[in-house]
Length: 263
Length: 271
Image (cartoon, rainbow over all chains, first blue to last red; front, top):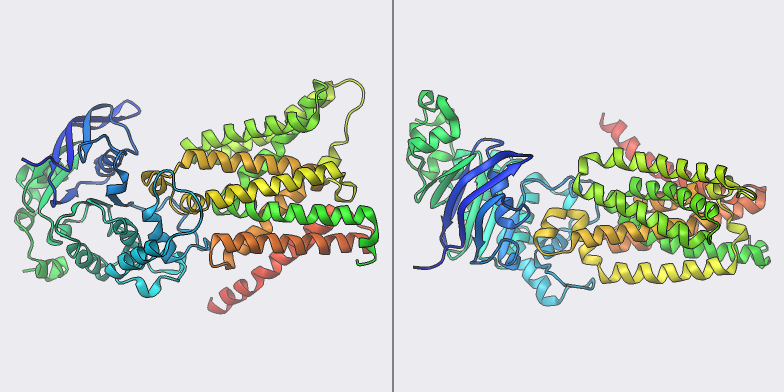
């Protein structure tokens, strides 16, 4: 049996003495495309930051590619939930290609020039998200969807074995969202991906498994939600919600319709 | 101005202006891009604490002020790196406390006391050769640090969290940038005064960052703009018998506001 890419055992994490996650067990296999769903404040981003090594668990263990989080950062591509405010500045003189090249940074790297091979890699990653034509544009001049695609190129440039996307559709319109889903569906089969979202239409984006996070984690090895998961997502009100459609995988063409247009 | 440059003290002033312009172009651009202007201002005011401490303990002013300012700036950096939401408050308190600490220590110092006003505006036309050498050394260190860690500084300015995930030593670079800004501030206060330092660190870099194609080019443009501000300010000061530091700030501020005009006009047309 092959080793899971992400292996989490009995994980607990507390903020200021309050447990944000407890008793989490999760194993993500190679090539799996896991949708991580959950309400705001449920611990989705916390879980990702623990996997990335940005946060340290209060108890339990996490192994990424068999090692402690943060040790194999070169094999991980990461698209953050939102930039920390600085990159959103309208005046920062950083071009799209430069952003993609940031995905090649590694510990101990010095100097200010990138090699021609690295620039070719960055352009190839930008081409995968259809952004190579805008490589010389300033990042701050792009639309929300273009920015998100550039950040995905930055995550893809190092050919990662694990791709982690935190709410990639949070700030883009429905059209941009489905463009993004198409981009994600084209990512190579060997790549393991974790896509955090509170938007259930992510289930139509070619995911192969689902994990629901709300203080604890419920996992399904197929893209459908069990009653337990709905309870975790929507609490005591779940049985009153017409959520039956989400109990099975939503066909992609149906997911493109707005809720009022669905049969 | 050409006639003025034949005078030795004006030659020293022009050289000091050039060296300060390079220094502020490099460190100022990184400070502006990383939104650390307030932190640099805090370090500049905390430097007063170092001056007061040096006089109170009868120790050499420059090393004590550098050590005190770097320590204060690193304390600000450590707090603000972990608790971003407290940045304004922490820097504001250290800003005021450093200055008050320096003034109280000077009050308690018996005998000769320096004129604090000279630290506020400096005196670029009375710069000694030793300060010119110190500034030249600082420029070399800043350029070397900027070249060596350029990509790290850019990624830190763009997305600190991603940079950390990729293994960029964000905490080290943040502290390095803070320490370099603090040392620059201390050396430049002696030459240009506190107010001019803040102007040189913020006005030209913010103009350059808005228009340059990359952060590296912004550093070059900021350096060139600072040279223009300093030399034209010195020319005005010489021609109209004005305080040199204030004349340089006036030129920089006027350029800054003129540069805002096209944007404001476009916004008014759009409204």
